[in-house]
Image 1: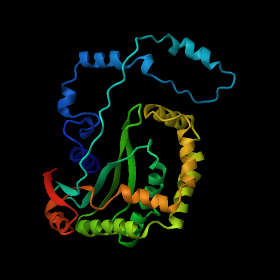
Image 2: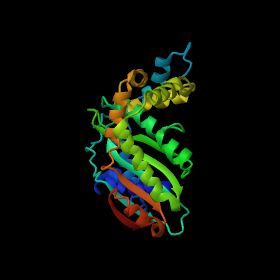
Image 3: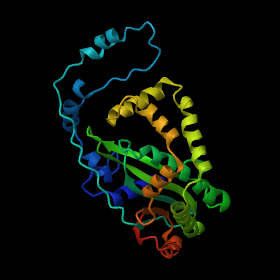
Image 4: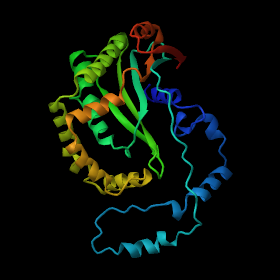
Length: 304
């Protein structure tokens, strides 16, 4: 159900002619249409030295890296290639609810989202911090209410998933809240989730919440980069997203400097209660009417 919810949210948010509206690995129809000539043409157009970056991480003591690269990748030849065009990402985040009907389901999968800025935006560190306070861990507001106080779920998470960006830094991220609740409590759980968002907008985050988030995000950073693979993955991601080499280090510094007011403003702007697309994968016969009664947007039911 989580994958089904993700497919439906992308379909709802993005125009039908946009690549991001469809599954990343394609559909049965689009994959069937790919032949050897198409694969070869793509490879010849884009897999070439002029569009590649080598990331090497490890103990390079007494290693002549320039020599190693010259003898290996240095032999790779090819004509320069134009970068693939990256059309701008647009989305319709009009507040609405789509129920993907799964008759007899004992749980409802929730996925609530919209698009927002990506890592090139100055607000990104504050948004990361605020989103973590909202739903980044077991101590977040969503978990505290929906899991600890009400017992609706084993956990609810808020996060931002980077989509893509071009060389000019034009990009977007998917801002989302995800989790599952038992079927009879789908309506009450959504009602309480919206109350959390409204309370956050009215009262803001606390300094204690902000401090806990900074400790969790920044304090554990050394553990995340204990292996060469994790360092290489981070650097490769920065290359792909056209970010500076010191981006990750600067992000941690910015997170530590971000105040409670700034983090509050960022997360409230990221999750406005009237601009969220809600996808529910569950038993429509049981959840449709309670969800309609919440008034969080027009409700549509589609087959699962």
